[in-house]
Image 1 (tube, one colour):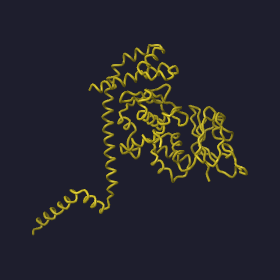
Image 2 (cartoon, each protein chain N blue to C red):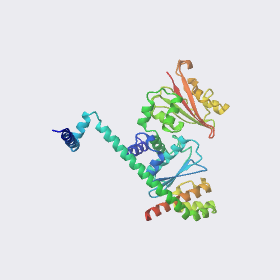
Image 3 (cartoon, rainbow over the protein chains, first blue to last red):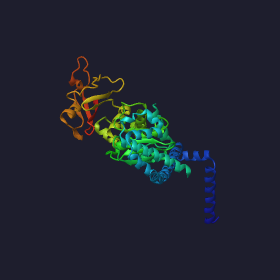
Length: 136
Length: 259
């Protein structure tokens, strides 16, 4: 047999061997274990890598979406924010209690106007973001 | 296992995170559908406002130290994970971020934050074979990118060497904590000034702050503890290391014995 035919035969043999090992997970695992690989550790590590990658992709997607939504929402609520700035404390506290009823249980009298205005801004912001998000 | 620790471990497990340095904290927060805004806040370090699904976490942009910033963010993430259906807003300041004098939700959020930033298994493996010292606390704090204060509390819970913690504010002891079955009796000084001879006393009365190199100071056992019958101060080796925050006039004394 020629050298070329020999090499081809050897390649086919290797291919068949690899095929028989990889087509059966038990054989494949046994082969890898014999070669000194820790299968469970490798699987665990790979799985964790996949989970982390999914988290990173999801976080990037959320962040980029939210950054656009914040800009859009801030434009929409700008007028409300400005209006709130001119209101007396009692009125601000009233609006806050209406917008978020659970606030009636908090000691609102200890809050300063800025805190109430900022929280109202956040409440409006999150509501608008969720509305726009759902509409899209 | 407390709720805060359990939820934090479930989260780390869900994303295959063994070591918090593998994933930026901000990524974890955005991945959980919370939004981070950074701006100056007048009366608090962090705030969270819940929507139906998302939350806005606002962090005070004036926080000087990265360790504290990370703890506040992790604490707010804890509220996002555990308390979204309970109260629509949480404000967090130095008081709520302290471990010991708050309600259930703040404690849960603190426990959550500690486990997220310093997973107990990793914390133990990084500290168990090392001798306790202020340097070790700084090393752990640098490793986990956490504040020295939160690292001390973590060490109290998971470290191998027993330590006692005494928190003073405005020259008054507000709180103390010692390990269960600690063999020495800590004198209860709640609402009293720190004792003469303590490092805390030196700060409040003489404005003395030791350099890093000298931050481990020998103190007599009788300064903070009862002496047993027939026991002499010279029989024991007690040390005090203080984390001082002049801005808030607080001192966290870490007391330990070397045998």
